[in-house]
Length: 265
Length: 265
Image 1 (tube, chains in turn orange, blue):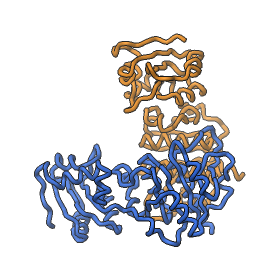
Image 2 (cartoon, chains in turn purple, cyan; image 1 turned 180 degrees about the horizontal axis):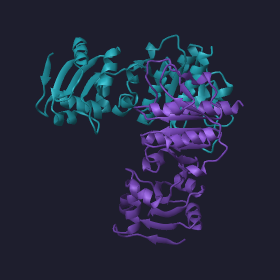
Image 3 (tube, one colour; image 1 turned 60 degrees about the horizontal axis):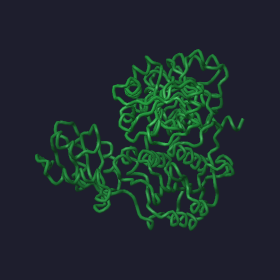
Image 4 (tube, chains in turn yellow, cyan; image 1 turned 135 degrees about the vertical axis):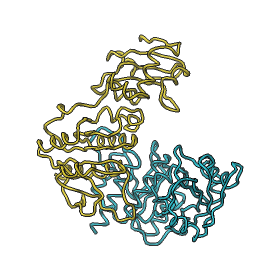
């Protein structure tokens, strides 16, 4: 194995990895993001995403099979001591390996003609929520999660971690909300707005099969403009006194219902 | 209104509030916890929980109706400047008011005879997950969430915040897992173990009406001993490549299915 040892904190690889973790603009310019841990590296190497740089913490046990796979796919492998490794890492308790790779999300023109449903996110702001929604969508093999304006950056380290690897499997697209809704209509897919308004249709009284569901901002919900573009307003019926659900919980119940309807087809 | 002004960081009220936020043992000894924000104060004052101390940040607008209500319920009201307020607060961006109150969870012997279902948590460790599960249970008016050994402390500030006020509405009980399962059996309630094992019954092929569902630790799941005490092993069927769901997402789908079955009764 060809592994380069890094011994200076001025090393450009350390600096680049640290900057990828912290700087959204830099990630966008480079079209790269950074991830930690063997599980994530395994997921990245099993996906279509290109892995560029792998940094190993000296003294930690990292699967040689995984490193071989990375080398075979053209990645550059480095190792360094704990102190320099921690400089490159974004987390409080860094793992044994971190790596940079291409961003996994796709453009509007890559959206397939046939979809089994989609989740459109319009301004979901919390990184944990976004990551968890991507993880749930992947678990139920949803065709597409579409990120519209105002969503938090899906390549932020906290989002990536929360996906537990789903970021490399779940097809993710970036579009304007109007464009996303139009893309659904072109594909004859009903667009349902998830609301908290009582005159909406309870989700157990409508068919979410082959539907797209639009989920809005955690605090503000969906804009009037977005609502006016949707075909149906839906609500998760709640019997308790709570005013709302956590956004990733609401998304989970909606995705489950979309998938239940697919299963019962 | 009788409001006492605090001007020293040596003040015992400031010290006590700060310690309640940070020190689990102290919370248990005092049988008190600490919360932030007007919404939480409103929820606490609307519940059966006793509010002890309210601390207002000078210069911020706090509803006088809310303060009157607190005074009428026997709370002591203090005000202080931003610097001392921040000493008492646990969060990075403190709100305009914080308060101490009695712990809201109940003991085993307070569990009602009639339940519409229950969630038993066996070792749920992440504060955000626990808070979100309590919020979801409250939204669907579940009779009981039972916290068994190994669960994170429900009075930790991060849990309390994630509940969005549900901590004051959702009936929460603390019991050993064996005791909780026995309590369900006494009430003729079926106990279902949420698993990731493929030979379990898919949740859409079983009736979760009037059931108790046991959810295990985020990493390890349920112990063999707990599994052996349950009546049924159930699984959320997933079509994707993910191995598991986030614990609060799994709980949400399970609670939704429990509540769907109740609705279709």
